[in-house]
Length: 124
Image (cartoon, rainbow, N blue to C red; front, side):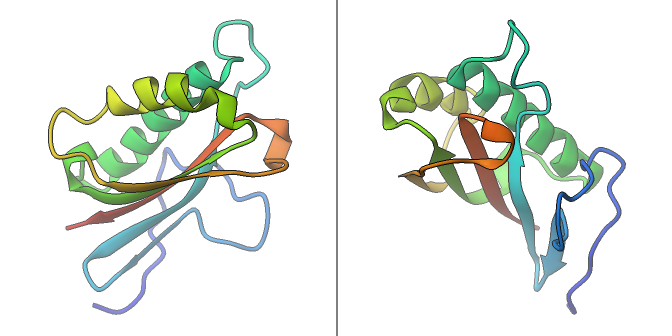
């Protein structure tokens, strides 16, 4: 299957020269997603942002007729590793069984000064 860039109704617009989603060889690569409303009182903490990001990823997967069970690898970027436990709990609630492989990395800064960014690889 050649590389394609699907146009997803729920995908946020790219902030730079990249595609929000690329599909190739049976894999779906979702670029790093950040909370759209990170500054709100409701979802401003890292766990709330993680939930918001995972919901966004779920909508994007749904546009492709996929779900969380199709996710094989994620990478979580945290601006503060002290948020690991709360983000881990929020993130884990989206995977009922056999969670995907995952890396978690602390970074100095994230786009829009959010606390969490998550990139995803799924398979068909």
